[in-house]
Amino acid sequence: MMYIIDSANLDQIRECVEYYPVAGVTTNPTIISREKTDFISLIKSIREIIGPDRMLHIQATSHDAEGIVREAVSLQGIVGGDFYIKIPVNPEGLKATMALKKMGIKVTETAIFTQQQAMLAAIAGADFVAPYVNRLDNIVSDGVHVVGEIVDMFKIHDIKTKVLAASFKTVEQIHKIAMVGAQAVTISADLFQTLTYHPLTQYAIDDFIADWESCYGKVDILQIIENQKNK
Ligand code: E4P
Image (cartoon, rainbow, N blue to C red; front, top):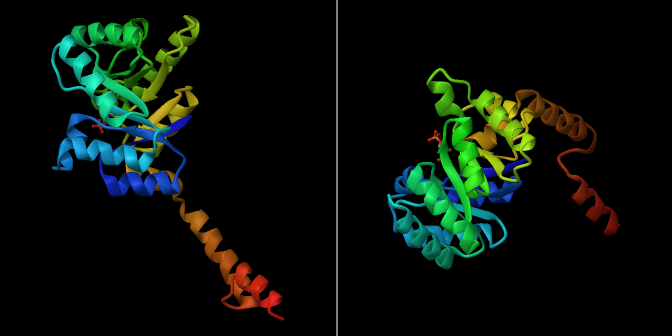
């Protein structure tokens, strides 16, 4: 499963790329506006940090298919590399998706809340569909169930479109999504830390170091090797 960072904050992206196996970055207009900075230099900086081989998903803001297609072409020219235009799943979005597929531009169909929205998006040619897990849970639906059915439905119909589950608040949601077979999750920088941390892990690390230091003092293995060489 691919882990993607859902952020446009350059410090967060830099840190996540350094410490975690990040496959790319997703943004949306809300995430971009939080940065309160020039849009074009922001997306260029994100590309610079993640390099050309990681995915960069940027959401279109035009309301009609023609505008979405033009935004996609321009954005691809600006950020280059492994680029995906994110398009909300509505009739104009689907029309744009079909046109972009013919042009060879990759599409992530977003704001997906139902299995049939995902199916239509996939048949229209989306490379990824992005169902919103936590927002589904918040309306007393079951985000994991919806994502699981999308994964199964794509298998039944031999559809190659990948499922990029989005909108997470908990580790449990992410784990359950992994268990239903989604190919990717996009999560906040905070969730990367939460996924990694466990108090027993920290306890084990502290314990190992205490035992080591009680025998060798406050030196690490590299220092011991260096000391040996200098003898
Ligand atoms: C990502 O593509 C979505 O835009 C995002 O995950 C939505 O998350 P939210 O429900 O936390 O806003």
